[in-house]
Image 1 (cartoon, helix red, strand yellow):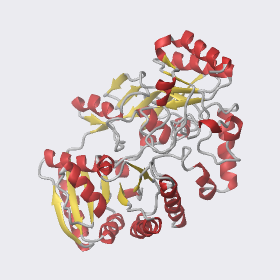
Image 2 (image 1 turned 90 degrees about the vertical axis):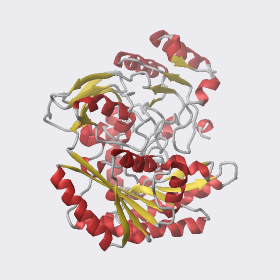
Image 3 (image 1 turned 180 degrees about the horizontal axis):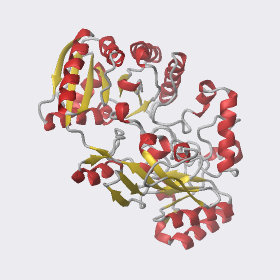
Image 4 (image 1 turned 180 degrees about the vertical axis):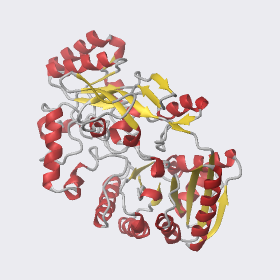
Amino acid sequence: MPLLQTEAIRALELALGKPQVLASAEDLQLYMYDGGVDKALPDAVVFPRTTEDVVAILKVARIYEVAITGRGAGTGLSGGAIARSGGIVISFARMNRILDLDIKNERAIVQPGVVNLDITLAAAPYGYFFAPDPSSQRACTIGGNVAENAGGPHTLAHGVTTNHVVYLEAVLANGSIVEYGSKESDSPGYDMAGLLTGSEGTLALVTKIGVRLMRNPEAVRTMLAIYNSTDGAANTVASLTAKGIIPVAIEMMDGPMIRLVETATRAGYPMDAAAVLLIEVDGLIEAVDEQTWLIKEVCYHCGAREVKVAESEEERALLWKGRKNAFGAIGRVSPTYYVQDGVVPRTKVAETLRAIEEIGARYGIEISNVFHAGDGNMHPILPFDPRKEGDLQNAQKAGDEILSFCLSVGGSITGEHGVGMEKMEMMNHAFPPVTLDLIKQIKNLFDPQCSLNPGKVLPTGIGCMEIRQRPELII
């Protein structure tokens, strides 16, 4: 290791204590990837326990001019937690305390390393829950959710992470501590907490998060609508919206995914179906009963062959277990996979599914789909074998074509996974130059030295990757 890096690591050990710093080759290997397909090796990994520790780390990074990458649980899917320019990875795994559970004001203050589901588990005895529920909610952390503005199945009606963040404490690149929003009520002025939510760790490092808690509904009803065609399922989503029916969740699986999930989970999905919709409504008992009746009517009108209603909490939990374990089920047919995250208008879901099938056939990939149909957030799964030369690149080309199609029908390149390093070159197609320049100006305002998560979000030539390019680290 070069002398400068050795001195920087010693400075980190002095600031945090030696057990809080990893620098051996075998340790660093564990932090070179996230849930996506990109990899890059950091020079050191550190584990702060307090905001003051984060300040100390940034001061060391500033002295030695090294990049900083924040990391939650590493479940992200766009390379956001990858140290693309080397430098220091700050793992927030040990900043994992719920600092205040204020039920009377329906708020909680948590550290970024708190697991998403643990917020709901802490609030549950009081009749409350935390609404954003990514599929990885048993593992992902709230800090990562804030960085990516994560969504989930139940955010169709309740909103994504930014709709539930009321306060942020963060450390800027120069080591100063800032507070945005309010722990108690809405605050006046610009929504700076909203600006940081979804900024993918490129503007500041979030060290405390105030979230809004929601009261448990009086009643919940979960339905499984079964179809002999994907068009029927997709058209149901648009029809529900057209009638003003907004369930809390509408998830869709196509036939290939149904068979993978059912084989792995035994959740009760029909193996011969072309598609299923998992639909959930909640609220007052009378309203839930009425909505259930209306939803069944729309499903049958759009060609559903059967609509099952979960008869118990156990049956409901099993249906959701199948959905949330869907990505893991793919391991039965492929050693790994590439997942995309494009968004299309609800009225274009059927057309997009046909396009995805055509793209898969052209590239020789059997694509399966499981996604948030209610808000048009597509998650095509593209299996590949990393042992076969060119297999990953083939899947990535197909993925780029899918995103291009999403843009062509009025959609977006990401709904919840973020841009990261995976989609940064697609930003040129998603936004005009004036918008990209404005994003760059905001980045320069917060982080003029480009030390925070460089090589993410903005495309090459516009972002700051060129300043800190470490090509030997990109694998």
